[in-house]
Image (cartoon, rainbow, N blue to C red):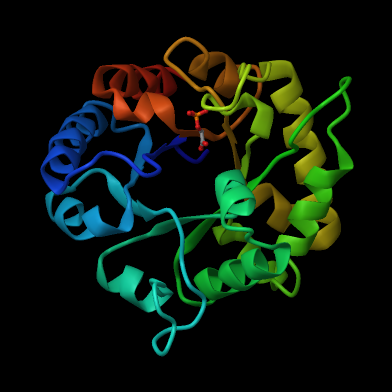
Length: 253
Ligand code: PGA
C-alpha cells in the first residue's frame, strides 16, 4: 500500500523567504520522524528555490503551473521551470484559483495534461461549493471528467485527486470539516468515475486524498474510516507543531 500523502498547502504565506525556510525546516524534521508518510511542501513560487535546497525527506510541490514550456507568457511559471527547481507535485484546480483567478476546466485540463506529459504529479482538486443532503453533488464528477479529458489511461497512475469540499476549507465562512463517512462516499464516487474513464485497475492506482479543515484531531479518522490516502492541509500546515502531529497521526494508520 502507498504511504499516506500529506501535502502542506501554504497558499500565499508566509511573508518572507527567511520565515518560509524556518517553517520548512520544522516540517522537514517532522517528516524525518515519520518515514511511513510521504510529506510534500507546496510553498508560494518565490520560495521554491530556497526551500528546495533544504529538503531531503520532504518533497517539493508547487501551487500552480503553466502548461507551455517557455515563451511569451508574462507572469507564468512553466512546468519546465518547476522541474528545474526540483518540484515533483503540482496542485491544480484549487477552488481559490477557480474562484479568484477564474481558472476554467479547460485551463485545468491543459495543466493536468502538461504535468502528466512531463513527469510531474498533478494534485487535481475537485469539490462542490455547497452540499445539501448526503449525495456527492454531480459537479464534483463534472470537474473530474473535464480535468481529465484526453488523459491516456496509462498515465492515470501518476495522478492524485484531492477531494476538497469548498465549504469545508477553513478560511471560508462557517467552515467545518467534512465527516470521514461522507469523505468515504466521495472516494467511492470518484473511484467509480475514474474506472469509467480508464480501467478499474488504472483507477485503483490513483491516490485520492481529502482536504478541508484537516487537523491533528481529524486526520486519523479521515485516513482510517474515510479510507483517504492522504490530505491536503492548508491552515494547519502553517503551524509546525500541529502539522507535525498530523504527520505522526498519519503514520499510525
Ligand atoms: P484548510 O485548506 O486546511 O485551511 O481548510 C485546505 C486547502 O484549501 O487546500
